[in-house]
Image (cartoon, rainbow, N blue to C red; front, side, top):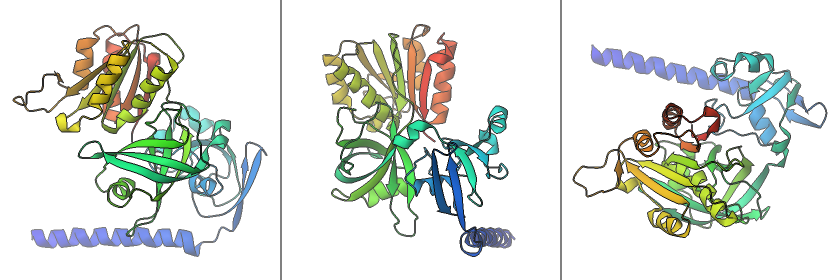
Length: 367
């Protein structure tokens, strides 16, 4: 009986997948939308594109790169644009990410808007400065069992200008049946290092881009990326700083604190780095050196699942618990957070409970 149920469920699932594939094929191959015109910012720029693709990919093909941390799956909501004409109805994927005010203001997710007719859109001016870069993988080194550091030497253009905290979108090529995708990674190098970009990449099980990085990308290989994107950067104030990150969320904080050192920004800064066990820690020696060189900086690694008998003498527990022990009163501070949505939401709740105005919390959520 159980076998019959399993076979039936498997058959229905297979039929659903086949039907979805046929619908996509019909969209791309059978339906012909012809050439569609995209009017950008009321005549600032006009594009003629083949209809049928998403607005996000259609713009990217014309070297206009819109942020998309999830690679166009509709789960990050970074690719919001105003679509004033031709966008069609709001789909179910978009609905949870659009407020009532945004809907009234014609805001849409560019990855979910299909180019089936002429469109009129509005794009923030700063995105016109985003460039696509050709690069070469200069080095790839493991930092932990599931995190690697990449150094990408820029070839064309051969220099980039960015703020510490911003990110780029890395493009994985087609490989072993996987389509080319774009994924967002924060820049871990400092802005003064203009001829290369460094990234910290964590392996995501079955992730198309991270699997390519870990299993296929080799030193010397060509790499394509675009950027810079994002508004996560150090605010111009004198408030003392609390940084909270975990895993590959290290990247923008590593860039920000070293940029502070280079520029002589000596605001008191405590960086809480959350990990499971000691094997998930990295840059420990580098942070010890930074503490020695910068009296205003303090690094606090905390482990939540380290065995009791391991000999670890540092902080233990959830990162929010550790932050509360150090800063029961955070009312005078600013916070810079980077990591998973769950970690960031929990950290914001803790900081606000400890007196920090929510307006003083800046974050970059990794979807």
